[in-house]
Image (cartoon, rainbow, N blue to C red; front, top):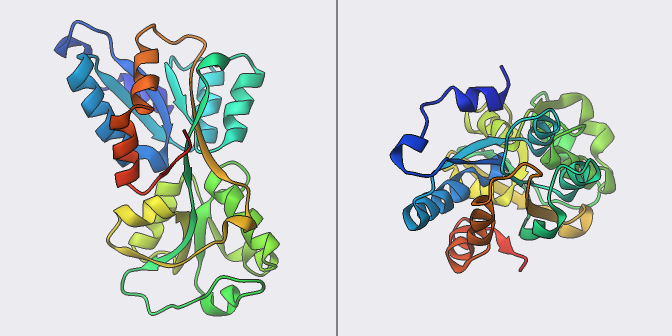
Amino acid sequence: MTLWLLLFSLPSLAAQTDNPPLIVFAAASLTNALQEVGDAFTKDYSIPVKFSFAASSTLARQIENGAPADVFFSADIEWMDYLQGRQLIRIPTRHDVLANHLALVAPADSKITLKIGPHFPLAATLGANRLTTGDPDSVPVGRYAREALTKLGVWNDIEKRLVRADSVRSALAFVDRGEAALGIVYATDAEIDKKVRVVDVFPDSTHLPIVYPIALTAVAKPDALKFVDYVRSTVGDATFKKYGFQLLH
């Protein structure tokens, strides 16, 4: 069963208000911050919001296949471009909202120390253990990670020891549970999980900028524009800053 079908198997929030719920498809790394924004939006506008959080690639393909999302909030530009090229978003409502950084993390009790740089000893430090990140072939965080490790000259050394997660939060969970010795996630994800610690942060020059665009889908309900505007309001700004995101507007 797809995520969006699971979403609609949940009890409806519509009964709580006179307004139908807005359906927001958003990158997994936005989970904590966006739920808080959504709660504030519902309080202010009496419009309920239902979220589906997953890898941006998964969500974009679900929208392409007819999932009735009102808003798409992606963790990178490419998947928003993917939908725009198929006329599945409303271009005037598209905005780049947030930026992030890429972090190398380990379990909180790990003794691993590393300084990220050209040809740094990542493989030697891993030994027989595993590194996890999102699947580089589809999940944005994995694509950023592969780009960074390739530029630093260490990708070929660790590729066969990579655990390819289906989202950044899945990768974070592998490290949290000690199932991977190291992980590459967004800096904001590392901040919300006390069972992991940041080993080092990748220089921004090693990968494309991590940008989060938002847009209404082609089938969005009229009230959905209020949510997009709210995300970019002072309330949204304060919430995203609290969770470690950088603002782009």
